[in-house]
Image 1 (cartoon, rainbow, N blue to C red):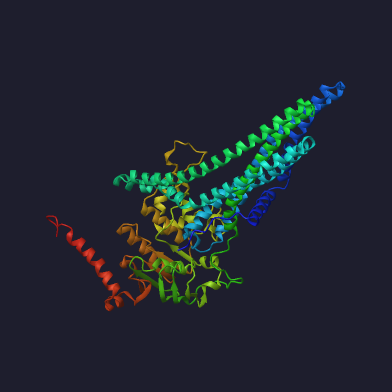
Image 2: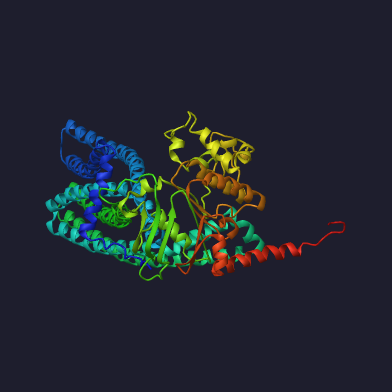
Amino acid sequence: MSERPEPGTGGVRTSLRGVVAALALAWSTGWYLPVAFALLTLVQAASPVVAAWLTKAVLDAIAGEPAAGYVLGLGLGLAGTGLVATLAPFASRYVIDEISRRVGLLSQDRLFAAVERFTGLARFEDPAFLDRIRLAHQSGGETPTNVTSSVFSVIGAVVTIGGFLVSLLVISPVMALVVLVAALPALFVELRLSRARAGMLWNLGPVERREFFFRDLLSNVQAAKEIRLFGAGPYLRGRMADDRRESNAQNRRMDQRGLSAQSLLGVLSAVVAGGGLVWAVLAAVDGRLTVGDLTLFVAAVGGVQGALTQLVQDITFAHNQLLMFDHYLKVVGTGPDLVVAARPRPVPALRKGIEFREVWFRYSPEHPWVLRDVNLVIPHGGSLGLVGRNGAGKSTFVKLLCRMYDPERGAVLWDGVDLRDMDPAELRRRIGAVFQDYMEYDLTAAENIGLGDVDVLTGDAPGSDSDGGRGLVRAAAEHAGADPIVENLPRGYDTLLTRMFFDVSDDEDDTQLGVPLSGGQWQRLALARAYLRGQRDLLILDEPSSGLDAEAEHEIHTGLRAHRRGRTSLLISHRLGTVREAERIAVLDEGAVVETGSHDELLTQDGLYAHLYRIQARGYQDSAEAVPVQAGEG
C-alpha cells in the first residue's frame, strides 16, 4: 500500500524554489505585466511616506510665516500624492488580474501536460497522488499569481517600513527600535500558523475526497434510481455530514489557534502604539517636538505597524501558498511512472505474435501476486480467449498487454521484443480495444465515437473528410449498430449525450440539448470506437456485449467475428459461449494459467473451464425448463 507522504516542510530551499517558479510563470506570460505591477506597487508603497512628510512640512510651514507659493506647492504635492494613491490600486488590480488569467491558463496546461506523461496507471490508482493532483490543480492557477503579488507586496511593505523608520529615527531612534522589535513575534507566530494550516489541508485530503464522493453520489443520475428505491439517501447524506463535521472541527481548531495568537499580538501592537503616542504628546508639550514632528511621528508609528502587519500577512500568505504550490511543482516535476527507453525500439506491424514469458506481477510489495508465472502466446492472426473467476487476473493481464504496468518479473514480448524497449504511445497505436468499464463521455455522439482515433476528429487520419472525419465516424457506428440510434437523436451525431451542460448560444428551455443513453446504447458507441481504430494489429475485446440483450449480442458478435477474421485478437468474457470460438482458450485461476486448449479440448479435460461451462449451460437449461407451456403449444 502506498503511504500518504508528509506535507512539505516549507524550508528555505523549498520556499525559494517556489518563489522562483512562480515568478518565472508570471514572467513567461509577458514580462511587461510583472514589471508594471512592480512599479505600481512601489508607487503605492512610497505614497504614504511622501504624504506624511508633506503633511509635516505643511503644518510646520503654517506654524511659521511661509510664502504663499511654498505652501501652495506643498498642498498641490499632497493632493497629487493622494490622487496617485487613489488610482494606483485600481491599475494594480487590473494588471494582477490579467497576470492571473494568463498564469491560470499556462499553469493548467503545464499541469495536465505533466499528467499526460504518466503513461501507466500506477499514479491514477494511488489515492495519495490523486490528492496531490487535486491540490496542484487548486493551487496551480492561483498560487503563482498570489506569490507574485505577495513578493511585490513584501517589497512594497519594506519600502514603506524603511521610509517610516527613517522618519522615526530622525525623531526617536529608541521608539524606532521598539516598534520594529514588537513586530518580530507576529512574524514568527504567523509562519507557524501558516505551516500548521497547510499540514491540516493535506491531512484533510481523504476526508474531503469522501465528502466529494457522497456529494457526487447524491446528485448522480445513475445512482438516483437505486438510492431512491432503497431509501439510502438519508444514510449517505449522514455520512457526508459526518465528513463535513470532521473537516469543520479541524478548521475550527485551527481558527481558534489563530484567533488566540492574533489577539495577543493585537494587544502587543496596541500597547506599543499607545505608549509611543503618550511619549510623543509629552515631548510636544515640553517643546521637544513640533506639531509637524508629532503628526509625522503618529503617521510613522501607524505606518510602520500597518506596513509590518501587511508584511507579516504577505509573508505568511506567500508561505502558505508556497506550501500548497509545492504540490503543483511536485506533480509537474514528477517523471514518468514507466521507464521509457532513451532510444525506444520501433513498433512494427505484428508478424509473429505476442508472448507473456514467465510473467509475475503485483501492485506493490504489500499486495499478493496478481499474476504468477504466466506463459501465454497470442499468435499473429489468431485469437486467444481468456476466462476465469472474478479476481483471477484477467484485467491485470490486459493492463500489462497495453503496458499500463510493467511485469515485476518476466517479460511481455511483441514479435520477440520486450514492450519495455518500446515507446508506450507507439505501442498503443497498434491496439484497438473495448473495455468492460468503457467510458461515457459528456460530449457529442460524434466525439464519443471519434475519440477512438483522435486523428479522425482532427482530420489527420487517412480517409478523413472535410467535416471532421464524419464519414469514418458514421461507418464505425454502422458496423457497431449504433448509426440508427444516433440518427434518431435530436441533432444526430451533433447531439450532446449529457444533460450536464448546454451550449450557451442555444435556448436554455430546449430539453433535447442533452440526451442520456441506455447502457446498451452506450456499449454500441464503445464498440464503434473500437471499429474506428480500423486496421490495428491487436484487438482486445473485454466483455464487449455485457450490456446487450441476446439478439443484440448475437448481432454484435457476428459483426465482430467478421471484423476479427485474420486479425490478432484477445477475447475476455464471463459468458463462455462468447469465447468458445477462440482458436485457443486460457483459463486463469488465482493469477496462474491452469488450463489451455480449444473449447472442445477443455471440455474433455474436465477441469475448471468445463466446470464453469456446465454451470452456465445448466442455468440456461433450468431457465428454459421453467418456462410454462401454454395450451395449444407443441
